[in-house]
Image (cartoon, rainbow, N blue to C red; front, side):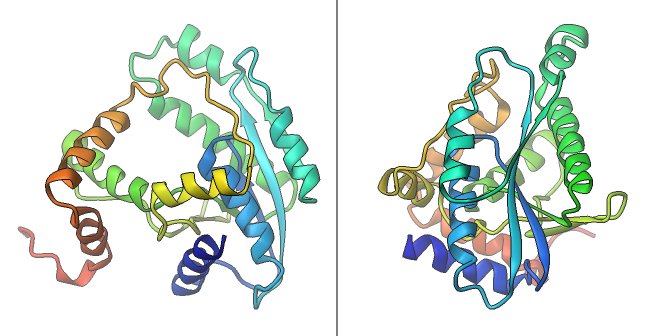
Length: 236
């Protein structure tokens, strides 16, 4: 975990993600990224120069047979309070609205439910498990499907809720996340969403994988390009 904690600490300090007295809720889907983030932030508490509270929050989308007990047990094991928000998002998105491309609506509804719970329990920051590969993939999704050069920021302030989204894993590669999950026996709950592995993000992931085969240093240079906000040379 030294590599994970080192990369996470670098991001936290570079973007001042955590301040003394913060109450941070990790948005826990049960997947590898959020589960590692939860564990890493718990370990980081022990030597962090600032003190903060930590909790885990899962928004249950309403899928039947989606077992969150491994997440609950893991939170109990590492002594982190855990909350589950039950919703009917699956019913609304797939059966009422019958969305052909449901990911966008699902994301908005899930985030809304998550942020409402954060306010309810009196927390002021939400930690999300996005890593460096997510940053690059999001930029390509935006360019290819929206015609915009954009991706999410390390820290985002949501003025309508008066809370911050922070992304402490942004300097880490997906391969590092996968390795840390295996090395530390962190439980993962597999998604049962019918869109899993079939979304536009998955298509972009495959595209980038092919690019990295041809240009091995491509990932690092793309990430560096995103960070170099003062060196854009685009049409005005």
